[in-house]
Amino acid sequence: MYSANEAARLIASAYDAALEPGRWPDLLRLIADQIGSPVARLSLENSGPRVELLAWLGAEASFTRAYENHFVELDPVMQAVRATVPGTVVTEGAVSGSTLERSEFYQQWVRPQGLYKATMTKFLHEGDSLGVLVCASPQKSDRKTGSDGPRLLHQLAPHLQRAMQVHLRIGQLSNERRAAIEVLDLLTPALFVVDASTRIKFANRAAEALLARADGVQCSPRGLCALTPARTNRLRALVAQAAGVGHDVEVGGAMTIERPSLKRAYQVLVAPLTARTSWAAVVSHGPAAVVIVIDPNSAVVSAEEQIRAFYGLTRAEARIACAVGKGDGISAVAEALGVLPSTARTHLHHVFLKTGAQGQAELVRLVDQTAFIRRGNDTDHIVTQEMMRKEGG
Image 1: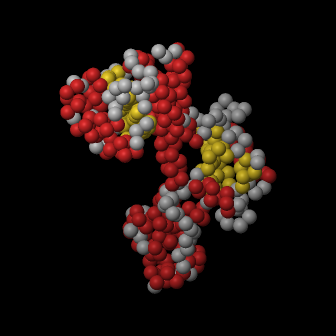
Image 2: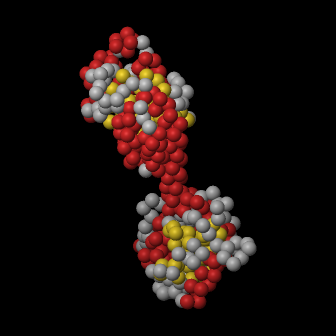
Image 3: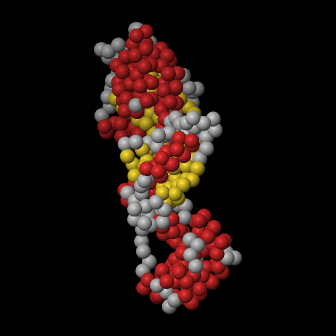
């Protein structure tokens, strides 16, 4: 006979396992010891062949492999428990003795291990997920057996169900977090999630690369900072406003940050991030803001590759399109790329035909809308003037 304290310990262990998946085998061992079963199995599987969680106790590895690969579908008691409603406890008595003993499962798996009694429950059945606990023991055992096993499993079943639901939900949230982070890592602009003091809570791949370059935006113990104190103060003021510090309404803002390399200044956008945003909880808890830093130089590199794919441009045409898309005149573009103005005009004419853009202003908008997604191995690369000459003559 098990005590109330022993039952409470098992229930607590079930919820511990929900939060720490590595503890499911420990829970199985506690249950098996309480029932007096030397062999036990805890599984979470879907309607197909995939097993999501599996813990075995007591059986030799050859028998566990044989069961999972073959006998699980031949086990008549398992078939009986699968047909029940969650929480129902089934024993070997659910199948007639003659049917069980004539089965291949009994003759080749149960009998060689000296097993006889079985107590099982399907504690979870939601959608494709099926959770089953099996405890098996010999006909004669010096360990405590009898009516306690079914009663204990009946008491544990609703707690196992809830614990497994928590386990599945945590797994779902973990998958959602990974998916959200992967999407954010695909973005070309650097994206930071910061608290009200500009301390970084999340940075996508582009943001980490931006910090590594240390060209105007850095991370100090106090948070993100710019090249000058004035720009740093402006950034922190925008972030504080976006995070709602001292304001009834959360607002954002925009600014530029100069760079010691003297390249074109970063374009910085600051916006609120609240729980009303569907993915906010994935990367942050509490008041926060999003800081997006656009590098006009590196964005063009990504835009070249993508505009080529979208509109079937040659490499030279894409180079011209992105240069003109920055607002530069055709003469300046030709000089910068080391080609004749007539060659640049020819390429630009082809760009207008292929993209449907009616002029430079429309081309600027098209290029701005293009460089949003990074390639998986996105790296800076330079198209040489020689390649331009080969394509453009």
